[in-house]
Amino acid sequence: MRSSHVLASLFVASFAVSGMTAASTAYAAEGEARSMKAWPKPTRALHKNEKVCKMKFGDGERTVWICDKAEPCCEWEALNKYVKCGSTITGCL
Image (cartoon, rainbow, N blue to C red; front, side, top):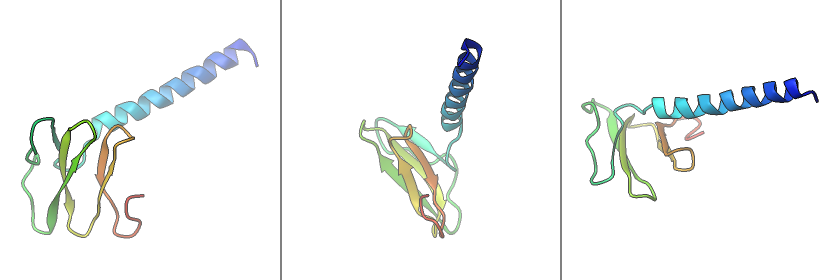
């Protein structure tokens, strides 16, 4: 492989990784709030047929977010503490 192809491949790979990182920090679940000290309040009021999801991560950080009552609360600590509402059909996929 030529060096220009190697450099292009590295650039594309680094751009893809940085894009995933930026997306995970920019995206927040509905009503998501985080705290290291105590359970925070969601960033918006709870509506009818919604529930507050709570998760305490391994480093002590607590997060809350809002999902419909029928949806599961999903969290992935290994993916930069990513949280979301799942699907009633596929669960937390």
